[in-house]
Image (tube, rainbow, N blue to C red; front, side):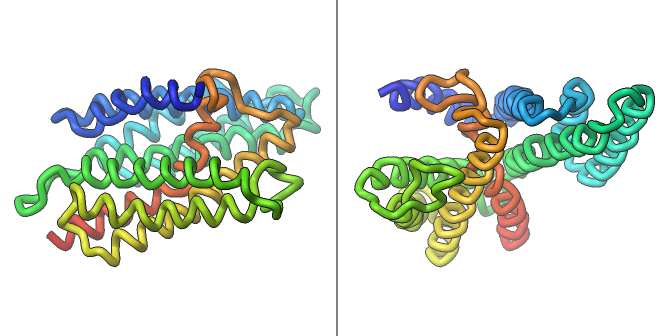
Length: 272
């Protein structure tokens, strides 16, 4: 019930930011989600005996968001190089903690890539301008994307109760092979439904392929975050969202799929 109530509150806000004329509402919402999820990620690393530079990582995340808003991807390389240099320089000033230097620097940098860079690909999609023959391109792409992600999660969550075969017992004991198949089937159905209801511009083959790819990558992303939590000895990344855990728990399946949607959006827009 908590999951449903959280969705009822959050979904209208998400749809508003996707469909309103200004993309900056979505940018602001995504930026907040990124900073919250990144903070939760760094909290996980602390439980694994790492000491990341959380402030440096957060500033880098804001810079990554800026690079996607203004379509300057070359800045991302500069940002990651800067994080590496500054993080190492900070560790040089603390030689008493030399044994933690490698894992701490790695955790700082990985957090920026895993959370900020991957999630910011969605900002790149939202900033996509409308083509003359293809109105509301970004809004339709993002609506389809979130519909597939949410339906994959819903299908896997409810169908897993009928499963008897563990999918990855050590990583996430509650997930089953049957649930994973159910989530994938739900994703495959959601793509064509979106195409038929509000997205006539894309071919049916694209809708099916997107459903399959997002349904598969999303579940891998979910398992990847479960692996991180299991290594840190926690069940949820946080308790921000009732029924969903933390922000990182909510966006884990989105992270692996966002680059796919971004590059597909660029290919699609080039064809119109």
